[in-house]
Length: 323
Image (tube, rainbow, N blue to C red):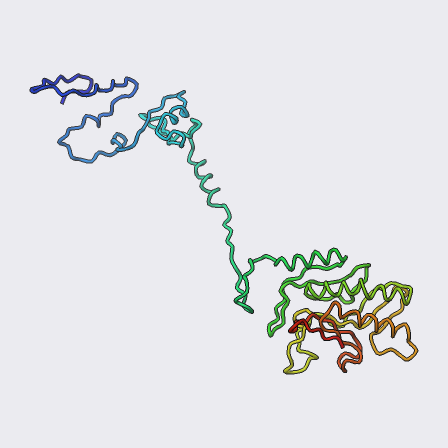
């Protein structure tokens, strides 16, 4: 084997085979000793001088634009790794801009990628009705959102409450706490209801109760005394009876109406000479059946002798019970 730098001459014994001229040797790139290893040596080279197969490495000198070198590579539009300082004791990985990327910068980039929050979307099963469409976790159905928009247009003051689930058929998935209706009419105490009964009650007060009181007493309504809203109990609190609509926040009981002039009207069977009171209670009671599916009051039974009961119980064929 001739030493590096000497040219070898080969004397052909047969007809010469034409071949492409060898590429000129680059003076700026010193030849590694490993290129001239003994063919009989079968040891696997290692270390800094070990040849790397199938890897194209460009020695980069100071001042060389790595972007131009990258564009000259196959698939040059893809960022290629560029190594600077080959042949020195401190080789470094250069970024595309030509500046070395330090280990700390690589670690920061890796940490930023690992710290990205992972969001998981899940569906909540409908335990009460598994065949119904699932709802997204943390979301509110479109019907509930539309109901709340109606409350705002009616001038209802309310706040959303966490879901109520007391077991035994007592629950309100999306409850609201109502404190005031249109015209500043206060609800005392605040009522916990579902949105649908709140919407119906607010319409009844605005369209029927307030105008009827103003017509007969020349005074608006100041407040409404509610006796029961959400309550986990059976109908009329009887053992073994079906669950009341109060157990799902789907009913409200009205016991007293107070006017702006200070006069209070109790919901009871009025006296014989209480003409205005009798007329008011009769009118608002008959008109309430346009808004509710159940209307009970004085004269219906002993359990409703001193209040109006309004609810939105679902019945077959749209039947309404107004007694």
